[in-house]
Each structure stands twice: as C-alpha cells, then as structure tokens.
Length: 366
Length: 98
Ligand code: SF4
Ligand code: SF4
Image 1 (cartoon, each protein chain N blue to C red):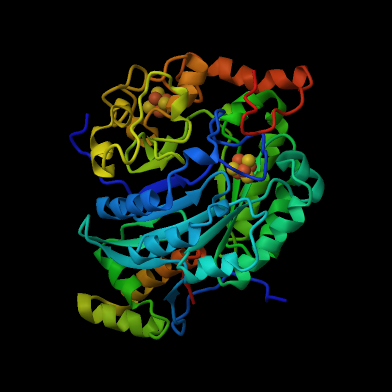
Image 2 (cartoon, rainbow over the protein chains, first blue to last red):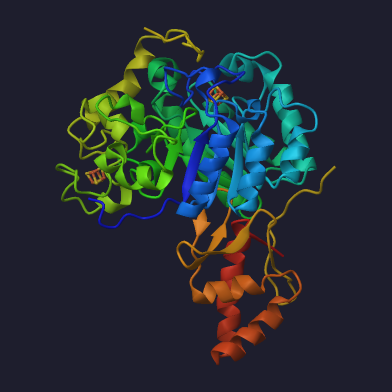
C-alpha cells in the first residue's frame, strides 16, 4: 500500500481551536481542545523544521483563529527561513494593531480571510460576533496596505447563497486576487447543523450560473475558485487530493491527521508529533496508511476509471452516511447510497429548520 | 482609491514578471523546480521553466522570444505564438504580471 510513498507538499496547521467566532459550519471537531492542550512554541518550530526537511513546501496556518497564538510571528519567521510558503487563514477579528505588519515583516506570503456574509446582519447571524463585519473589512484593508495578497473565502449555505453576486463585488472592492465560493462541506459542526444550512436546489443552480458568468467576465482580474456542494453533485471531490497522498492536517495537540474530519472514523488511531518524528508518522502511521492509494477500495471504486482522480472521495462522508469508512463516497452517483444522500438535501425544506448549534468549546451538542 | 483592475494582454513590449506572491524555487527533496502560489504548487517542465525564469520584469516578451528561439534553434514566429499563449494563461491566472 505504501510502495510509492511521496513526500508531503502541503500541511494544514490547526494552531488552536480557540476562535472568537462560532460559525455553525466550522470544520473543527465537535470536541474542541482547550488552550492547555496546544503544543508549545518550541514543538511547533521543531515540527516546521521537520516538515521542511520532509518536503513540505506550503503551510496553511489555520485554527480556530491562528492569530490568537502570540508566537505566530515566530512560526512565520521559521517557515520563511526554510523557504516554506505561508498562508494565514484568518477570521480577521480581534487582530491587534501592528500584527499584520509584523507578520508581513516576518515573511508571510499570503492571507486568506473568511467572510460569513456581505453585510453585518448575515455576518453576525453566522459568526455570532457583534461588529464582526466591520472588523473583517478593516483586516482586509490592513492586509492590502501591508502589501500582502488576499484571498476572500466565503463558505456558502442557505443563509448567504443569494449573496454570491455581492461576494464577487466585495472581493473586488477589497482588492482581493482570489475568491473562494466554498459550499459548506458537511463534516464537523456543519454535519450537526446540516438541516439548518442546506441550500435549496434552485439556489444551488442559480449560484453555478452566476459563478460561471463571473469567472468569464473577470478573467485576469479575480480568480474565483468554486467548491461545489457535494450533496448536489454526481461525483465526489478528491478529498485532500487523496488520503495522506501529498498533504496532511496537524491538530493543536500535534495529532497528525489525513484530513480535519478524520477523527470521526472511530477505529483510527492517530500519532502525535513529539511521540515520533514527523517522517516516521508520515510513513508508518496506521491511520495514514488505512486509505492510502487504491488498495483498500471496494466496488464500485475498485474497478472505476476515476479511482485515481477522486480517490473514492471523502472517507469521512462515507463514514457519516454509509457507516463504513471504506465505502464509496455517497456523493458519487455510483454509490448505492447516493439517492439517500440526495434526500438529506431535500428534506430540510419540507420541515422548516431548527436554529443553529453554535460552535463553542465545551458546547457539545447532543 | 486604487485603480480598477483590468485584464492585461501580452504584447511584444510587455515585460512579464512573476507576481510578488509567486515563488520559483529549487526543491532539493524532489530535485526539481517548484513554483509556489497561494493554493497550488506547480512543477513546470523544462520549456515552461525557461520561460518563467526569464520573467524578471526587465526583458520584454520580444527579447524573450528571440533568446528562446536561438536557444532551441526554432522558428521565431512559432516560439512567439507559444510563449504568448503561455504567458497570457499565466497572466489570466494572476501568476504573472505584465
Ligand atoms: S469556521 Fe468560524 S468558528 Fe470555525 S475557525 Fe473559522 S471563523 Fe472560527
Ligand atoms: S466509484 Fe469510486 S472512484 Fe469511481 S467515481 Fe465513484 S467515488 Fe470515484
């Protein structure tokens, strides 16, 4: 299964689970870690050195809210010294005066700012944080003033799908080069809140037309990445580009995961950085090896010509919907559960949805 | 106010340059040149590499074409067409600026 083990290219570092926002679709696990479980500065710096040695070229500094780590500048300096490309993924609220400039000076390469909506109302409904919208705009301005390139990330669901045209305008007004129209992936908190977030089919179809038109019109001006909604798809996405193929996630406590949702597969055991070196974990972790390559596949994936295009889709979605992490992702039309997954996209609109379970540490929904 | 962004078109007088957030560097682990950008890492082939390395904001497209045609002992018009198409695509993807 590990005959052609490749070195990892990308790493998503969840530096902390702490966040001032409470988005009901947060990709963090339901069991959020408190600050006392986060790795200390020295361990992170050591990890970054080992990652660079192993071949990691790109690190996404994420969370929670990564700027809550006061040692973020030190981390960026280390990565920059190792010529690793750094991307800060931030919610853009509560970032102290001078910090963005300090991060730029430390060698930060790029900033990705999430917007929950295009106005204060939607932004506060989703993030549950007063004044969030204005702060985010201010962060965008400071990022550009510091000379850093900016991507706007817009997670899309029922409550903001009609704002897609305005997201496209706003990204340009904020002088962003990239815009991610990212339909929510239903894992983590989003799975708990699925019924409250699921958009209607007609809106999804309108959105696809709007994005296609804008992409054409804004060629060479704004790059629009479109993360399509799995529940309305016929083929799955190559989750993380294939399980532990060339990227991985590291949790705040140093846990090495193939993707941020992998802890939802109950029988997998994850190693922590510090217990072993990164190179050892990358090569030998039983969790990383569980679905590497194509050897683990069952039918219909096993004999499918797309098996090295989408790698059978998302293992966590297979777990959540098929109850079997080695099943074909039900987003795929060849999955026997595809019709059932479709139903999850239709039902919520018949029974008008409940409120959100907001993401909070210690607020595990039942 | 910042000037409105517009799509840029490659001409022989353009002086292409990699954008600030794009980095071409040698990767000793894979023994290959990598081009790093916000979401993606590209592995340019030899010809692409020869073009990208010349994108220094000094050389014009025309000069690049002459140099490449000489180096590859190829017809200048054909090289011009290929290099223009390549750079237009990279400009449209906001990796190269003119
Ligand atoms: S999705 Fe929202 S709550 Fe989760 S880390 Fe991002 S900003 Fe914070
Ligand atoms: S059957 Fe498996 S490999 Fe084929 S398209 Fe569906 S998920 Fe992908």
